[in-house]
Image (cartoon, rainbow, N blue to C red; front, side):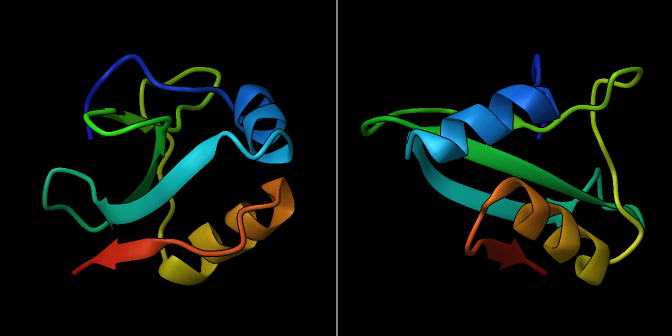
Length: 82
């Protein structure tokens, strides 16, 4: 889940436009924190991580917290890699 990243405001707009194809939640670099990535468009599209204003990756301490964030931006579901 490494890349340039997408900011929350852009993510919210993409969700509203139904442009987000898939959402994936996974541990960041095998650590304790969770990250959220999205895939846009057609086949072969790459995963783009959600980033914070200051960090290249936004992280959450629990799946519950990721779920609350996802709900707040309009994401209705996501896959989880355990």
